[in-house]
Image 1 (cartoon, one colour):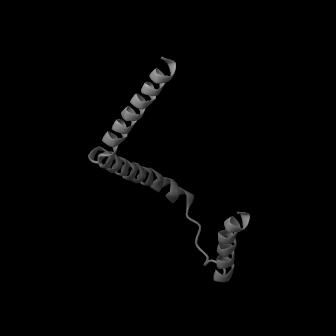
Image 2: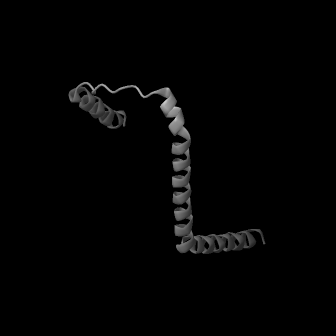
Image 3: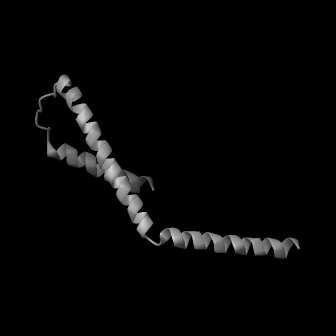
Length: 88
């Protein structure tokens, strides 16, 4: 199992070593980073909100909640019958 987990890590390290040094990048100015932070945070929040709303709508439109509810009620009634039969 350890070998199975270590092979992808070894492959990634080998890939990074063969790719060579990364090109030099200018360090971002700290003031620009802090100025952009509220806009990025707002964008992240709106994206997260849209994804959450879409997921909730998908769940509402699917038949999964109804099937799950009926499965739980059937299973619960079976367990109740078993208890009545066992302890009566």
